[in-house]
Length: 116
Image (cartoon, rainbow, N blue to C red; front, side, top):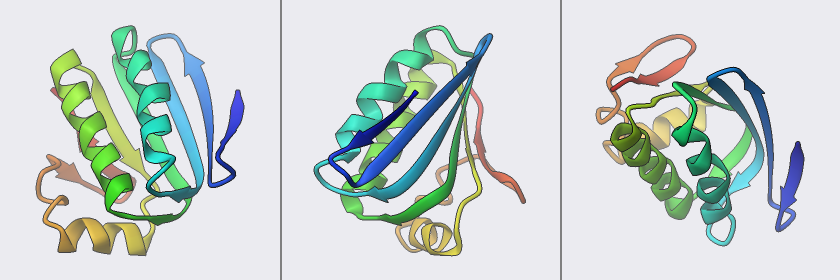
């Protein structure tokens, strides 16, 4: 399923058993960041693992980062593994500058893994 969100962010969700892959493209900014949360959060109820593919993400502002943190907290509470893959240089640098990169448990070539 692919849904344009305010013409800024496209979210495509693919399910395979107890895993979901969420492909993001566009801009994760104020006005659309809550839409990401409202589409991904329900997946945590019956998914053991959610992969956020950020390869198509062009830009994220502070509200977008807040939405990622909100997903992190929700995943932790649901005992769901949340994995960020294909982080661009800009997003990785932004997470580093804000100190959020150190919040996530493991950083690898493929992305950031958060398992609870």
